Length: 182
Length: 298
Image (cartoon, rainbow over all chains, first blue to last red; front, side, top):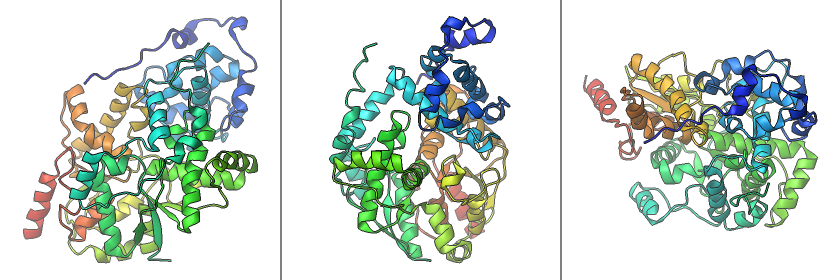
């Protein structure tokens, strides 16, 4: 089995030692993120780094760094943030959010960034398939005949189904699997 | 407050991939007189949709809450992520009128409605708060003396704090260690106890996810624990199903069985291996069971 690591993208590496040109910045980006549910508190960040210090992904991934991502948002580096795969690396473990002395809801903020990135077509490959499964079956692991046999053998009851209405509820997400027009 | 009836919320992963967890929960609940009902219509909790669209995730979660409310039952969850997702939906929609109206407009499409907060608690929390450690201890008729068990709390059993009403300390959690102690086993303290399993990172970056999981397994191997104890199917899949994958990639061995807490309780209550699904693990539990047997004959 191959273990794939997404290489650090040029956008992130540029952040290390290159002057940003004003023209590359989107000064409304912090506002845009604040308007998303979970993004509200971002301007309170004073860059102490408690988030990065406790982040389990930060320990093992060469570029993921919550403090830096927050800075990039506040500086208006919209493309660098939303076009990079790194927003998808947050494990949603809430360690940062629990420890942030400023009460920034960092895990919720990362979710807001994922929601925004996805709207511009940046998402891991597996996402459209998951969404389709949920819409069509209401679950990520639909039980087939084999599963049900295994369940019976394990002494487990058959499960009542009836989640056809999930497809109606999630109808608005219908186009996710198709390529977005830029 | 005890011997209540709960709507059992299994979520996506457990009924298909982690049957041993479900088996042991049903067996332990029955033994203790906790009534679990399989409600018609429960679907995904909404957690996997959070990164996709927060509002859609809320609606999917709220759909389940509406079903439980119609049935007049509180929810018992087994997956930590389902727990935090459903708790969060209930809390958000109870407090945020705008979000509630938005969600109810979506739910109206399927003739459902979120009315009021629904009680959602993880099975572990129900055991602690409805039964209490003393009653669990009394039910443990075959104590697991001398067995060394490491608790893995995972993330969403306790975090974020505000949705779990201070059930246990996030920075110094004890509840799983207390349960382990109540079975007569030894809870092993270790430095990476609070570390995430990495499961949520799998889809975005498999290597990083496995490195996070490996970090804990390597420490536990050095501490010579008999098993890792989990309460969430994501964590279980990560440490059990992926353990051999990690052994191959990192060219080392761990050999750490991964048990769900209700399996540990069930063993101490004298239940059979088969009842608890102890043969359905990727990392074999045989060595642990033999050790238990030897101690019992001891």
